[in-house]
Length: 134
Image 1: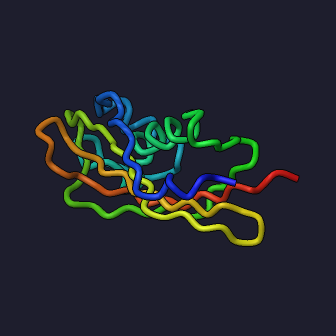
Image 2: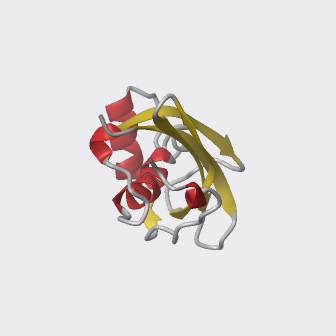
């Protein structure tokens, strides 16, 4: 079981991620999304940066998450502006909720994704289900 004091905890921001035309094209191809060269990123592209923040949460030994017990329950994005080539993005994750249901921890997170000026680009919200020990 994850300790209740995880709720409200904010983790350090990720390293800057350079958004390039090549990375946007690769993401679009991998996800089957159409995208015009020079156009904005697919709306789900911020997962690339948000996932780095989520990985740091799960790797933190003080949290107690065991990756093999995790199911990704939900994911959503709230955009302030489109992501475009040339952006340098970082994500800072906060655990906004934690509850236990039926032997599982339900962990709700919000990652603020900002550009190099610190302006909010997108908020990535996710829910993880962490199954308790057998």
